[in-house]
Image: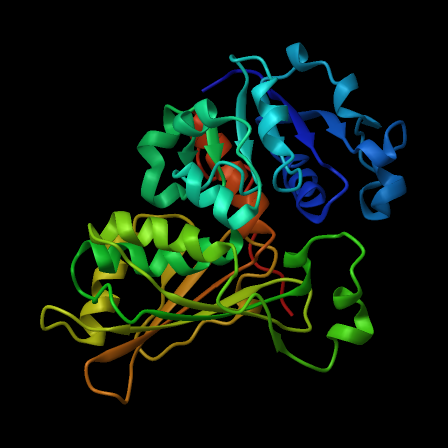
Length: 348
């Protein structure tokens, strides 16, 4: 554990995830934000982009090419997909990085190129990257220089499924994930589909059978199961700012029942500070985690014999993005894992 605050850079500070990193890091006793980049807003105060952060003592935004990398200890990269690889490849090799894009999440470069439609620009770095689902890969994260922070849907879906597949309590076949997310999950860019009048008073599915988080989920479930896993994953946009609810339907295996699943998940996560398995019959809600780094999991027996229903919730901007990234930074830098992440959920 370091005796002085880590000098932190946030690349892509003008997005929702960048703002959330700032909100959390300014109260982190082991971190000092010393670099903020946003190419379109270079030279301007962050308060011009996010008025709610205007009163903080923060450096002005700069363009990436004007960054002083030697003055940093750690970088969070919150840039759009496909723009991150070359940026990270150009950083000093001594600089630790947590990337919040999808550029290093998929271990198979061919799968990345298939789903993201372009050539991977840093294949050697991909071999080095560690997948950042903290509760599952903590030991590898502790020794990593580059961590690929998981997606928000993937974090919410994988946390209940990975231990159950690893224990052989559910079948790798026939997994259905029905997930709902708040609008901030789509990012801050100007899109007609994200306008208030387009989103409010309704719910809609999108990315049907082609959402980019599907191969990421399948990658991690395949590792857990020890055999190829293919899932049916359908995301939905709901008229709220934050939160993800994943309703996952599974087939029981090995003679297990729903209570066995709940007990196994509780045994896995009872020691964990941020993942909590609820008592039998209790369903989690997104309001229970809003603004926090927590994930809540509920387990129910399906009325169809031999099947069970898993419910999991996170805040997509915290445990699904910035919070988990800071959790990974803490592990990578030898800090207490919960440091800067002790906030409870905002309610109502």
